[in-house]
Length: 434
Ligand code: PLP
Image (tube, rainbow, N blue to C red; front, side, top):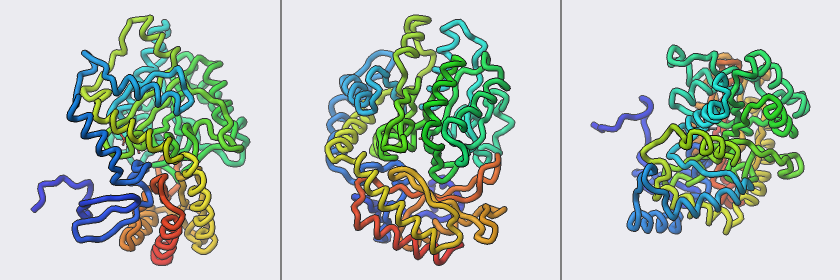
């Protein structure tokens, strides 16, 4: 008998080793990591440089509590990360996971308004679909009924007004204008922030609004005194072919949107250690420090030196190996292959995404709509895994989100041949499961 509390009653292979884009289980089976786990392993597995950096940091300074110390590694990393992201005067609040980071961003937005004498601002507008995390606050913010349903009695939805999914038929600007109506209905003087994923991951298939959306949303937020929070936990850090997905434009990275708060996780330390964070603008930081003088919030492991050292080593690799540009190149190859699969497999309704955050919308070929009962994504993912390919399935079907989807997002370091291998394995899985 195992003493492990598994996530579900299905059986799990036991992973023992990983290298590059592959993992191996204890039976010697090899899996191509077509989803980087849950869009985490951005620099690939088994990178000796990162392992060395972790060991060196753990030996020299494993822990210093944030109420007593900053650390040399955190001081250096915060500056490098800010420059990499093109947010030179934002400051890093480092935590351990994306949910913690979103909780931090939401509480910081709330405190910002209180510090400025607007204590009536507490609501956070979010979108359907969206996923911001599993902790109660981040889950309450999420427009993903399937994950929220069981816990709704614990969440006051009136605090989280919802904006509808991006509409591909509208220009980005017209689409973002719909935020205005949500703010007006909520009472703009009660709203602290608008929180959105620039490219939606866990709750839909790499769904992004048209270009111009984020620029206009930022303008509307400014007009109403509402902070803009970009949740880039999944889509940031180069995953979409740009350091910040909120700045993706149709000409390869044009919108100069500067969110007040940017939330990061997953690819930040690429799975080598738990690391996430919030990048906060000088304006937000200043309001807190010049006001009460302290962010009224904290986690024991905030700014953990070993995690930060892992993040710094990952950033070294991203820069040295040009992995942001690689995400664009390999992403174009993978998207073209997925579109080809769409043409041959009628249950694939759409293939889309940016860089190496790509997705398939799956559904009923007869109607072109989602199946009423979700499940096809799980079936395809299961068939793919049996062939040695890992993918990330999901389903909506509540909250007005669409049905099944499959996310594809291998490490940014994947080779051209490995992308072809991925497509072959997925082709076989789609033949089998629909
Ligand atoms: N935000 C987004 C956009 C995510 O995709 C996720 C996880 O999938 C989270 C937040 C939560 O991050 P974590 O699971 O690290 O708490």
